[in-house]
Amino acid sequence: MADADPVTLPAAESARMKALFDGQHAASRREPHATLDERRDRLDRLKIMVKARAEEFVTAISADFGTRSRVETELMELVPTLSAIDHARRSLAGWMKPERRRVGINFQPGRAFIHYEPLGVIGIISPWNYPLNLALSPLVDALAAGNRVLLKPSELTPAFSAVLREAISEAFDDNEVAVVTGGVEVGKAFASLPFDHLLFTGSTAIGREVYKAAAANLVPVTLELGGKSPAIVADDYPLERAARSIAFGKFLNAGQTCIAPDYVLVPKAKAEALADALLAEVRRAYPDPASDADYSGVISERHRQRLTDAIDKAKASGARILSHGEKAATKAGKVAPTIVLGPTEETILDAEEIFGPVLPIVPYERLDDAIAFVNGRDRPLALYCFSKDAGTQAHVLGRTVSGGATVNGTLLHIAQESLPFGGVGPSGIGAYHGLEGFKRFSHARGVYKAGGFIAFEKLGPPWGKLARRMAA
Ligand code: NAD
Image (cartoon, rainbow, N blue to C red; front, top):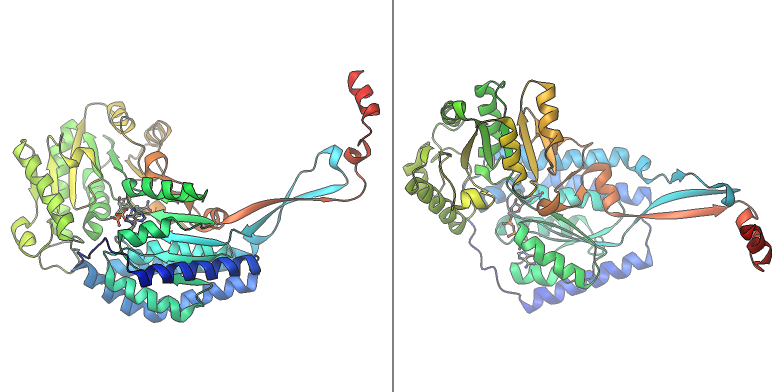
C-alpha cells in the first residue's frame, strides 16, 4: 500500500523529463501532422501493449491498493481503455475529414473548411484512483488527434507507475509517448513545461495550482476535477432499486471514484428505510468487507485516517451510523462501508468530496428543496436522479447543472463512448472521450480556399469608389 515520499525531485529525473519534453517538442515541430496511418499504428501499439501487460497491470494495482478486486480493475480500467482505443480506431478517418463550412457571397467563388490538426505535445497528469484508465484514456484521445504525449502518473501507485513506464518505453519511441514518475515536486516541474495542452485529473485544490503553472506559459488546460456528486431519489422510485444502484456506484473501489455518489437526497419519510436498504445491499454485495477481495482498500493511511475521523465526528454529533463490519475492516486496514443518517454539518462529510466508502443521507421535504440543496453548492461532476416519471426527471435535469448525469443508475454515463466526459465550474474545465476528446486535443484550423478573383478583392484600394458607394 502506498505512502510514498511525495516531495523529492531527483536531479536525474528532472533532467530526463526536460530531455523527453525537448525531444517530443522538436519532433512535433519537425513533423507536425501525423497521418491517419501513423495515428492508427500508435493506437494499435497501445492496444497490443495493454493486452500483453494486462496481468502485470492488475497485479500492480492490487499491490498499490493493498486490496483491489481484479474484476473491478478489469471492468473499470482495462475494458474502458480497450474500448476507447477501438472506438477511436474505428472513428478516426471520419473525425479527421475536413469539415466544410458556408462561404458568404462576397467571398465566392471559394470554399471554407475546418482542419482538425495535432496540437503538438500533450502533458497528462493522472491520479491514483483508477491509475490505468485515467492515464491511458486521455492518451488514446491525444494519440488519435496526432499528438506526442508525456504522462505523469500518481506517486501513490508506485507499482503500477513502474510497469506503465517500462511498458510505454517498449511500445513507443520516446519522441512519441513517454512516462515520467515521481511525486509533488515532479508534478510541479511537469506542470511548468510549455506543453501545447495539459490535461490534469485530480483534486480541485491541486487543479488550481496546475492551472496557475500552465497559465504562466499560456498553456491551455483540461482539468478533470472532483466534487460532491448528489443522488436524488424521488418519491415514486422503488427504494430497493435505488439502493442497489447507489451502493454499486458508491462502494465500488471503496468509494474512491470521482463520479461516485457523494451523498443521497431522499424524501424525509423514506430516509430510514433507504438507510436500511443500503445496508442490506452492502451486506449482500460484500459479505465480509475485511477479508473480501471484492472490497477495495483505501489508498493510504492518511486517507483512511481522514475518513475514520469524519465518521467519529458525525457519530459524536448525534448521527446514526450504519456500518458493515467496522471493527474487522479497521483491523484489516480498510474502511468499512458506512451509511450516515443525521447531522454531518461541520465535518468533511458536509464540506468536502468524501472520496471513500462513507455515504451521508440527506432527507428532504419537497423535491424542490433537494434541488435547492444541490444548487446551493459547487456544481458537481455528476448527478444521479432516480424517478420513473419523465416529468420529474426533466424537472431535476432542467433545474440543476452538473458535468454529466445518469438517470436511474449511477456511473453509467461515463461508459458511453459517444458522450463527452468532464466537469463544470469547480468540478472541471473541458471534456474528453471519443469525438470530444479528439477535438479537445486538436487545433481547429480555419482554412479558406479562394476559387478565383473574388468580389471582396475587386473592391480593394484605391477606396474612392467603395467610399462613394458606402456614403450613398
Ligand atoms: P491529487 O490532486 O492529489 O493528485 C493528482 C496528480 O497530481 C498526481 O499525479 C500528483 O502527483 C500530481 N500533483 C500533486 N501536486 C501537484 C502540483 N502541485 N502540481 C502538479 N501536479 C501535482 O489527486 P489524487 O488524490 O491523486 O486523486 C483524487 C482526486 O482526483 C479526487 O478529488 C477525485 O475526485 C479526482 N478525480 C477526478 C476525476 C475526473 O475525471 N474528473 C477522475 C479521478 C479522480
